[in-house]
Length: 444
Image (cartoon, rainbow, N blue to C red):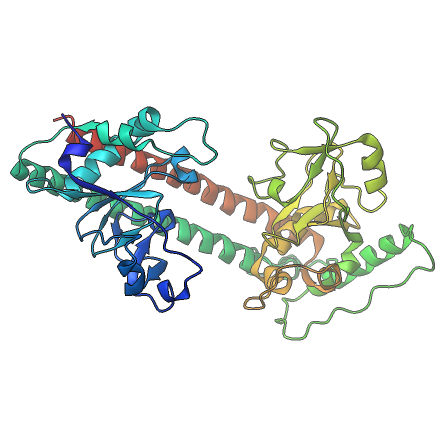
């Protein structure tokens, strides 16, 4: 076992004066900082300095083949980044560099340190600092097993052979994830285009019976909407949807605006409330992106009085649909709880005229057809406007067909979710296997 300090020459880094533009303008010398240390080999950097900055001698050139270590960064709270530079570089003050002496393989050192990274963070981390840091002398005193150079090369070769196989498996798993995402989009697209299950028109024709069309269903919804009206002033009928550029629908279907299918389309309270340690849950976009449903695990709370006031604008109830309109746009969640909660302005609420529409509307909102309307590609859109959401067009099939669509979507996507869960388990296993390979390599 030999301390890291004895494996070669160590050097630190610095930051050339930012006020001197001659040090940074059109620089060609890589200047590596922790944000560049997300790879195993450094071939470039986000920032470069000029030869003038080098001449100032605040920084020195680190030779190709040196091992770089992050010693100050928030990432050290859980990870100890190590990389080998494939070209001469300079580094900032948050890194340390080891240029191995003759007979020491840089790759061997890097792998050994990665294998011991958890112990290094436990033994060498500074305490009481505002930014996670590794104490330099403790790092230099940390010991790794060192064998002769030929053995180092054999160990590195075997590690890289095993990692190559592992990387191939990881790439395959990532491809499966991407394919599952495309599969989900394909299922949802087929669902709202009338291609996922037999249409009600086809079944009725084969069975020699009549059926309620989407247009007739829409008329019934509009009548119910009118009867439920509790707004101020005279009731105003929703206008006809603008279907310009939208595809032709199957027989028995009809386009309907989101506004015509709902009694309310509104967003949450616009002013950030006073949070309390307990009370009524206050849901923001982060609670919609933490899992498959609405997460009540990591919540802010508001008072009962504030909640009552907020409910004048929106009052989420079972069967209502929430859509994120800020941050991560177009995330769709159905309210499946009777627990009272309030929502922030970043969340919009769609209250269907009839709760029996809710499950199909979730399918429609998640489909590429509605997502393209809500979040147009290449628009640079950072916000979904309520007026635009109200005007978005929903392909509305007969109610019986909606039920079959929802059941088939749920069946197919539940299988996809099972596969996705298995993929995630294997991705975690792959990370554990990488650590075990390193542990075995340096345990002889």
